[in-house]
Amino acid sequence: MEEGSHLQSFCRWYHGSLSRSEAESLLTLCKECSYLVRTSQTNRSDYSLSLRSCQGFMHMKVTRYKDGKYVLGQNSPPFDTIPEVIHFYTNHKLPIRGAEHLSLLFPVLVQTL
Image 1 (tube, rainbow, N blue to C red):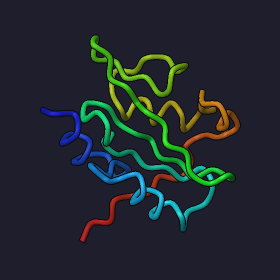
Image 2: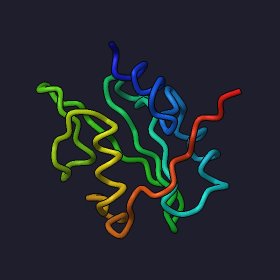
Image 3: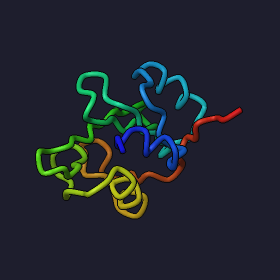
Image 4: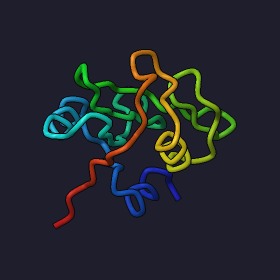
C-alpha cells in the first residue's frame, strides 16, 4: 500500500497534497506547537511537516531515503514510518534550527464530514 494512502486512512494529522499556503491558513487559528503533515510539493515521495511557532510558520521536509527510512530535516534519527517520526517528536524537541524548543503538541486534524 502506498504510504500516503495509508496515512490518510489512519492519521488524521495527514492532510495529503495540501499546499504550503493552505497549510499556513489552517495553522493561522492554531496555537504554538500545532502541526500537520502534507505531501511535499517539490518531491511527491517526501513529506512536509508544517508547524506553528511563535515566529509564525515553519515547514520542515521529511525525506525518504533509498533504504526506505524517513528523516526529519537533516539531524533526526531515521524512522521506519511517518507516524513514528511524529510520535517521537511529540515527546522530544525538534532537531531544527529555530525550533529547538518545540515539540509536536497539537495535531491539526483533517475535518471529515
